[in-house]
Length: 204
Image (cartoon, rainbow, N blue to C red):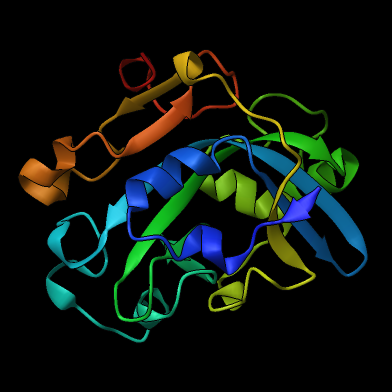
């Protein structure tokens, strides 16, 4: 299994990067505890022209400044004051593209994930949804800005691939505020995978 290099992240097509993240492995090795999962659902955010993006219109804040870094770092933000949402920053410096990782299929460290989430047994909700997966892998807002070349948190390629026929697309979830951009088909997911989040209407 090989760690993804900056060349993977620093391409200019955020939609291509998002699609190709499906099947990759997100690995957390914090405090000697190894957990990992295969990516089965993502959403792309297309920078300053995308009304659903935190960087729409060139907005820059203390929270989203990391989106303007060179691709290959984490962007983690707090949603509703509770959920830590993990994003991968892509493209080159000053172009704030990002991909939200929405769901994983658990691979390693499931007992640790159960302990972190307070669940009694593993089921499909363990890493379903961006808040759940971050909690299960021990990802927090303090990780924002961390390099994905790091040894504690990274994405890797184990040469597994989903067939193109098994990959679906839809509008993103929870971005109704973005007007017409809310309907852009920037969400990619593995069809019929029980770990994928969202209502049935999003998963066809």
